[in-house]
Every structure is written in C-alpha cells, then in structure tokens.
Length: 177
Image (tube, rainbow, N blue to C red; front, top):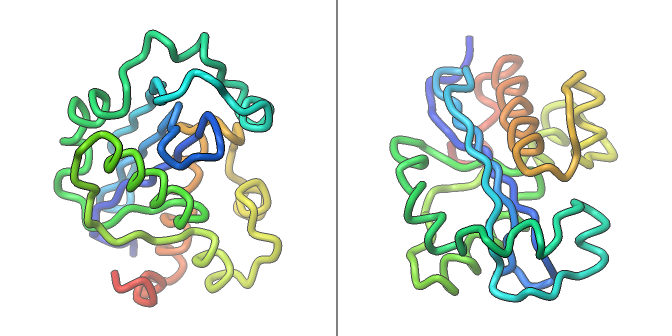
C-alpha cells in the first residue's frame, strides 16, 4: 500500500526554445504516498524576448516576470525543497531534466543528481495508455488539471506517480527506484 519513498514532481515553463529560459516552475513534494508540500514560482529568464509560441502555450509574458528573481536566486532560496527526496518525477522528463540542467549550468550551480521518473513512460507501462499527453493521462485518472500552469502540471505528475504506485508498488523498478 503506497511507496515509502519521497519524491518531488517538477514542471517548468520556458520563455523561448532555449532550455535555460525557465520562466515558471512548479514543485510538488510527496512523502509516504501523500502530498506534503508544494512550491510555485515565476522566474526571470535570461532574455526578455519571449517566443510567441511559448506565450501562447502558458500565457506568461516578460511583464509578468521582469521583477521576479532569476533562476540562480530562486533555486538557491528554495534548494532545501529537494532535501530528503529519492527521485524527481516529470511528465516527459527529458524536457524538464534538460531545463533544470541548462538553468543550473547558466546559473553556475550544480544540477541535482537525483534520478528522474518519466510519467509518460510510467503511464504507458502501467496502463498501456496512448496518447500519453498530460491531459490524456489526467483524464484517464480523473485528475484535475490546469494544463501549462507549472504548479498544476507538477501536482498532476505527482498524482500520476501516486496512482501508479498505489496500483503496483513495484512500478518504479524499471526506473531504478
């Protein structure tokens, strides 16, 4: 019943096509199968020119983030959020892992070395779902979602892991967890 491991589901929104352009991040911490903490923040990306495509996806503009902390300041202030967790989870983890890595590199900070669980892969292996876009998986699991709001996406991702582990406590083994 549930998994004792602690993890943080993470979701980034970016300002442009470069991975170092995080403009929002959502984090949802799970311990003992329960959400225990959440964190959402707007981040000032390194460039003020936002891609019209990205703005169309998430609705965040330079005017929303120009007075927000840059990634380095935000990450240092909230680094303790990852303390004591065993892994990170993200929907399409390769994207969020690359954003986190690029932002840390640009900020001169070490990237977390925690393993990632990809909830796209998890949904495919656990429920044989296709398509596995976040709204599709949330619809299947009857989860609320305000898609492309980083806090909502991170919480949905956390709940996908929670649902999979509840059904199959060994479902994380293929991820080395």
